[in-house]
Length: 221
Image (tube, rainbow, N blue to C red; front, side):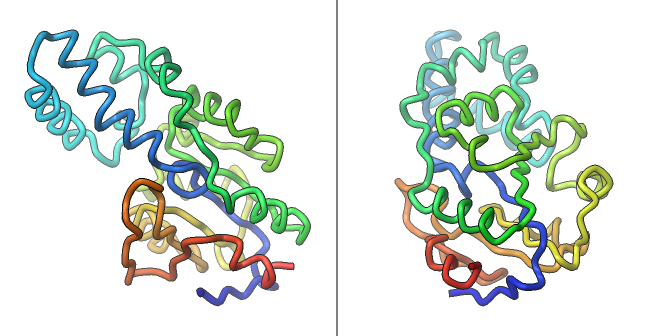
């Protein structure tokens, strides 16, 4: 279990998909549901649609377009929000999320959700998980026009929130994004090793990692 200096940590920045919410919803939607929809719309095989989408994903990886409903909607001639609404039954909060959030609140930490998800996806998932009842501030990086992979985002986010990187903990399931936060100077970093409940837990060596936030609670309080 990672040892974190909770008395020094004043601000906790949390990712959403794969950190607080089971990543299976997004993985299924983008890797299975959308290729199937493209296959049907373009009258091509599922294999062809999957290959097409994989190429499109790679071309915009790490940019705001990767997460942008308008970008994908125009490219694919699909209403992405409407399509996501068809699979909302897959939106699930991690079982350890609420106890963790409640412990952070009880300890008086400033807790902020910072996600690359499109604002419409953030609103949809908040509606189905009630995340907004446990976190005061929910931020989509779309409001800044850049993603967490970008150093520009961290500069804009710090100006917006006025947090001290030396007393901030950032939690995410993406190693690339954690590395970006580290380059910016965020002192305390934590990776989620089991973001998708339908996939095996990952072995992470680059950062301290956690598979169940409840293991941290006794240290926070």
